[in-house]
Each structure stands twice: as C-alpha cells, then as structure tokens.
Image (cartoon, rainbow, N blue to C red; front, side, top):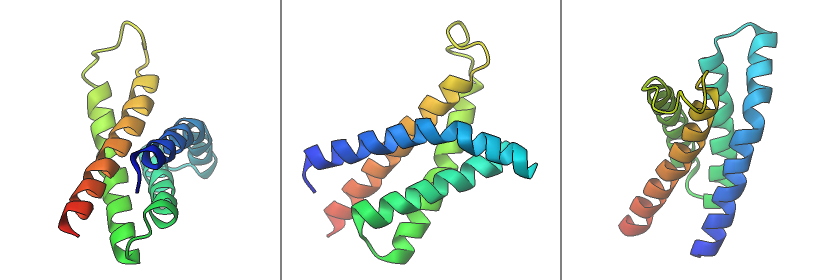
Length: 120
C-alpha cells in the first residue's frame, strides 16, 4: 500500500476515533456499562472495520490485531492521562486520553503493518 493511501486512511481513522468517542460514551451511559468496556468494544469494532476494509488480511489475524490494538491503546491512553503531564491545558484529562488513544492506535497499526510487510 502506498504511503499516501496509508496516511489518508490513518487520517480517516483518527477522525473516526475523535468523532465516535462521545457517542460511545453516551451509549455506555444509556446501557449503564463501564465506560472503559464500552470504549474498548467500540474501538475494537472500528479497528475491525479498518482491518477488513483497508488491510484485507486473513480474518482471524484482522480480529486478533484489532482487539489487541484497541485494548492496549485504550490502556496506555488512560495511563498517559494519569501522568497529568497536560493538566494545565486539559484539567479533566479527557481530551488527552482521547487524542493519545487515537494516536497510539494509529501508531500500533503502522507497527503491525510494517511487521506484516517485512514478513511477507
């Protein structure tokens, strides 16, 4: 896949992460579930859609990578927000967690893509 196409797809994925977070949180409130579970499942679905439409690898590999990336990116985003590095600019650290989750997910997808390309 050409770098320009990957950058475009990652930009779309970044926008989807930012735009769907509030909807996923409101869905979690409606269902009365833990927000981390709701966000993790929602981001896993976004990652699965990305993997099937953009990468077109084997289905099992798509699902495993999608769930692993969603879980690890969400965990690391919460840990990054708990560092309180940007508390001066984001007092509740919500935007920090959302942006870091989106950036970490894209970074993990690029790592997985590079590993898969190198092995092929």
